[in-house]
Image (cartoon, rainbow, N blue to C red):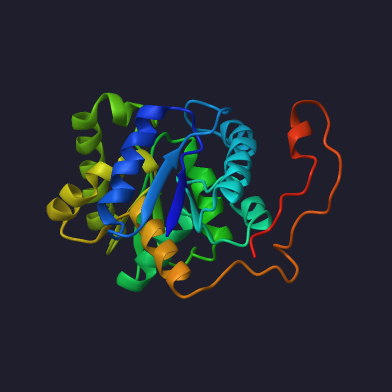
Length: 249
């Protein structure tokens, strides 16, 4: 099968790290193709960034439909564009935040998210409640580091994640830790060994869910909510979105 992993930001170094994480758990017969959109922010750390990343994500799904992908992973912890992407393909579309929360709920009764800047906290809390996980996520913990800081200073990033992860276990009584940024994938195994609880990276969780759903032959329901958008004209820079995307058979 072919899975397209979309990093919604345009920092290619981060995309390569995401690709490595995805390939590390993919089956031998699964082809992983990791991409960044041609347009969008270099990192996503606000509502403004997230909203402007969504057109690029949808564009990559449209391209993927022409390229014959069997599933898509949106590799940003805000899951930007997830619902819209599900409207333009029958293939499963998995967001890494949703995947990590579902996986954690099968492994632990309560868990905390450790993410980037403090301003992200409210965004994460709203996402958690939107997925109906408010009773399972006991805290959203932040660090003073930006998304790209984890690329520039992995040693400092590991230290920050370990400190907040330890506080989550000791103070929140979290029984698992979720890494709230796709750029944190490389730290998961070392953190798990250090903290003694499951540490879940959303990229690897999403890839394994995607493989399972494709293996089962399941596709996105087109009955109502996720049916193809009604054809209409878009103007200006969004002109290329005017024609409703074709659906996989």
